[in-house]
Length: 429
Length: 77
Image (cartoon, rainbow over all chains, first blue to last red; front, side):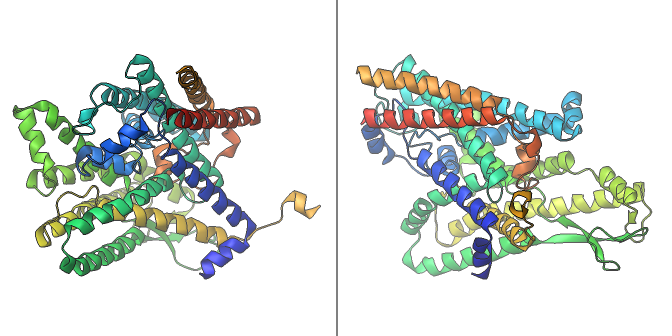
């Protein structure tokens, strides 16, 4: 309460909060406006036939229900996130892209621009596929349903696809505005807003599946899960650092200084990516028929089966280590420590320090990957084993997204409140 | 029918304009996945941002696109 009052009393934070809330509200309004050419009446009738699980369920949840409502923000920020990952992969393997990453703010700005172009191309492909599906084969998304567009044809398809691309890019634009002028990370907050918007539907779905006697158990499990996520998201291994030459940057002479290494360094993205990647074979299962591909895809449909669990763990761990390899360079950190006249007690600067940091971050990443897999899969496994609940889209990942983004935003808000505000040049005149 | 087609044309034109404007709009440095993973803080790298004229034009584009979308929703009912 005192945090909220302190934040509100500071005009800068209050303005940032209002901007954030306003942009989030605009995002949610866009998620409710149907794209041009969509027959709203027919769509409403078709939505009742849709089940929550599978690939469509995951994509729909991440878009806050906008996907199946064929809203102008149906694609959300997922094409941009996918494009970001692709550009980051290229940055680790392709020379010119790697040079841009190391070229300071100017190179980063250009990479950001390329990411946006890639996101536009990717959202173009996804929008065209979605528009073609709802125009010519609506039964794929809405089982047993007829056309959901007013005038099936190429012009309607083109307008629909173009609108969805523009909507997706506008979501990214809103996210960047929140990051620059609001509170917290914009893209994370947009994902959080989508997940929270879909939460009542998920709770209703679970409540209809869980017998009344199991509600207490499910509530207790949820509380324990939230507590565990809060604890691990704030957990960090603190490497002691000693400054040999001058006062440490914290300004507290003689006070111990630590280099914090977060346990979950990859954040929420591996869990989201794993859910999205593994939902693709499930989506293709219907098209693959009875062949080997169809059989392999059918194993992944069972989200509590051993094949899905192993595949999920492999994708999450793979992405965690990819993230570590592409975003954390122990040689660079060791160099920075040496230039600052600092060292880790018991280690000489240079290679031994770099090797130590490499070893520690690798172990932390392995632990972080195990944590992400457990958080994402354990709730579904427990619900399946104890009360027999079937498919719930995302499940533990929903809790992870909500808690992690809330913690990061609160941290930024707290640091904004604690930071002294100096009068601007205009105010002093 | 004519009104419906007119609104659809407006939607297509404003969507195309918005795509071009947003792609031209240079984002602040430090965006992308690193920002999503928590690396970016508010106000980072504003010096490399877009010009004021482009910002205004983008907002005009956003407003025109929003109006055409609402018009399509109203006409489509």
